[in-house]
Length: 609
Ligand code: GDP
Image (cartoon, rainbow, N blue to C red; front, side, top):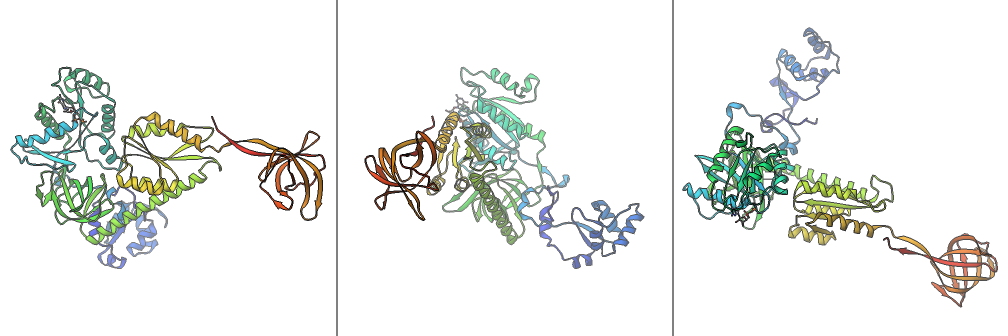
């Protein structure tokens, strides 16, 4: 029976306890509750007759019939009376483990490190700020050393840790969010004081707001002579980011990432905001979290940087991670320090996975390796199924569409750097109409062009459009192999321009009837089984075998049809030119008379303006 989501329970507990046969359950006097249990279901679970149960319910003041659905509370009450305990149904759909909501007992929760994402317009100093924050480690006397980019890092501040996602910009944030991962607690919106609020600043704040994540504005480059923080504050106030100093709710911090000024204050403010958010997690449960980055390392195999959101992850733990699984072999941070366990809020790079997961994938610790493998396999095959279904749907659509037969559609797969652009471009594409011919966006999404885009494109006869995104080298290759066109743009209107052109190219050519020549009928032969053959003389131009013919008698069109044969002597020929004799017969038409004129024409494509 399908279980309704969200599953508000500790799922792993269920998987640790294998489902028991009914006989065993009865021995233990347990009934398994599934939603929508009827009186008859409950009666058989309690091993009593329907009548007995109905009577029992009546004694509780409930008049019921066999088919009446009972709520869980009633079932519990009744079960108790018969000496049974009620337990929840075991979730058998392992593919949905990441939908399960974890409900922890509040007394098990402890404070965890906040997870921060830095966003803002290009060149406003996000990367420089991430470097400046990383540098505070040196100040704090922590290992400086050579860091490696793993996608996230942690710094110690006032004796507590703060986690930073080390991929500036909102592309990653949006993609992860699109995949259901909520891995950011606080967004730092970087705005350069000498440049002010820019389109990407607005996009970033919209993304943060949509995710309901608190925003701290870092006004950067205040060291510059033309810095104008006031303008930024007033502009952002109209976006609901009124500074605290102006009576609003948004903290603003003046910084110079380059000169490493204001960083301490920014970290203090982060801790303050985090404090208010009351970020907590239960470290004493099997870990769960999100993938930030993943790749295939030549020496180490699949590696993934993950952030533990709840629970504690240990070396040796078995995890299901997206569509793959594995046993954690090593854990390290960006300073290459090795760990044996990772607490909530901690980013670590892990090895030991069977395959490379995707950014935004959820991971969860399982108790049983076999179950983990089965779950990963079930998830992978579900993904394949969904893909196959969508392919089927699109390829059908490209042939017939849900539109009229014969209608032509240019299928498009659209990938762009941010959701905002995806929507704008999709709308523009879908508005294009060239004499009824249009573009249909079969998939639109944020992020790089992937293999699955190419697969879908090849299945649906689509072209791929990338706006401010690029395909990876292997994806390019796959596209070439499959003859899939990938077009990359960084100006939106060029996309529509090109698609319009493409649609014009796709238009069924418009044909015009062009007369190629005329012949005069000089003699008519009636031949049995063949019909009428006209002995003609070509007076003008030429007559070709694939011509259409118009029979003209005394200047009037008598019949329009097709040539059925064109002969010179006894041989069928392709073409007869002016000045030659030939035999002509017309498909399904015999009433040809001497003196008639046969005009030959062909359909010629004309270009659409
Ligand atoms: P991103 O595109 O947002 O990651 O921006 P970067 O961190 O790459 O910075 C863009 C440019 O701005 C670089 O040349 C930085 O050196 C410069 N920059 C960043 N922060 C500051 C700052 O506080 N003051 C000044 N004067 N320049 C800065």
